[in-house]
Figure 1 (cartoon, rainbow over the protein chains, first blue to last red):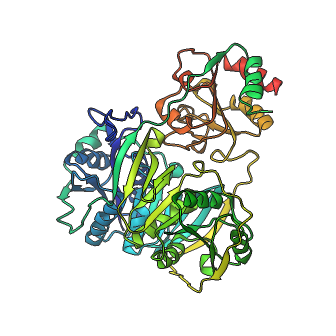
Figure 2 (cartoon, rainbow over the protein chains, first blue to last red):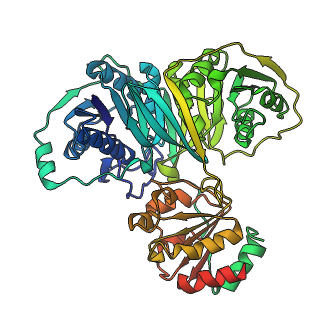
Figure 3 (tube, helix red, strand yellow):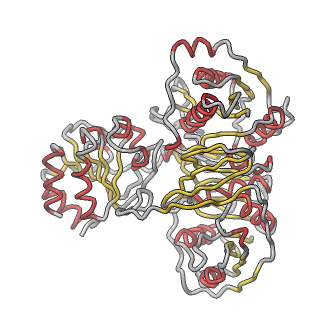
Length: 250
Length: 309
């Protein structure tokens, strides 16, 4: 079975994101970029399926600027076999990304697609579900456990208040939640090997996909600042403040 | 304009997020209809008809909708979706699951997790885990939207008198099946819905010391969280993690104990109404977002707090 995974290029989760003073967006100059952490979990899951003999090839896709090749190399160093970069400088939104992925799915015919449940930049949580809709595949979102059966996958999902288990026919789209696995670190020899792994490049136009944004960002502003608080001198004063000033405990 | 709100319910009654969804619909303005899809959900349909401001309730009562499988629900919503200018629900794990599927079936964008309505086509939504707020404008004919549950005050559950119409649309795609649910009967509230949270960081030193927080949590009816540092150090499991890569929370009271206040943690909790920080390092960044800071050794301060509650 071939497994297709995604590796979105995003601002590293440790970076303190700053809004540009002209409110046009966030400052991406000289900022550390990484693989979206939820995609890292997807890559790890696919590589584990290959190590277990369930998958025979792991193909990683990234859609973004030429520099997104770095994120594909990272995924290849983590154990993916082959990369596909769909290069565009457009601000591709989830529906556009899902349409590009659909075109890749038609080319590659994977038995399973695994994506992160959301990217930590736009926080949309749409792409996997949209890809499933466009390809007519079932979906298992927010996965914390995946078991591959003959022709189906049994997936435990994180839902409000607990867990839910569903079985989806394959091919399917699975999106990863935090608890699915703990991604490994790439070893130096694997980073070297990754440089020799194949990477195909396309543009959205090559794939016949229109990625024109449907949603326009008018402005980006910082969230309301928190008022500076006070330092209390004792636990007693703290409890008094919480009871009588903030009135959040009784 | 005509707005469809997809209800969350348990077949017998309407769940609170539905009232938030109707509130957001009212902020957009227009005729508000509510879809109740389920199996044996007539009572929930009746309850939805009483929600203030709703003009019509559509009830799709069929075994295909029993477990809210995304494939079937999305096909149903997309089939009737062409009649509306807006389709919305609340950003719960259920809404997040099926709604993007609806949008893709209708070939429109989804606007996720809106925190404000500027106009009928322009909305505010948090990005980068709330570190920035984007104002976005949709050019699609149908706006598919999920609504942040804490961003709108729920409308009244009573007072309306909507008409109820049964939908005879059955979408059973047969490509997925529900096996079981394990809804945890927590001794404490869930992190994402708790009104009080007490979280521990690397300063807790080990997992056993989280017992100190448990005692306080029991007295306050609070949930217990942790920073990524505490999770990475192996003190507590990952599902307790509050932060950009963990759970995003906004309780009435957030007590951060032995947490320095890394960016990624602040991103997950800084919308809390009142923040308390207990840390022995007076320079810890957590004090910059705390309403009440206590510079103290947590191993003295937490037991003292416990004894005073």
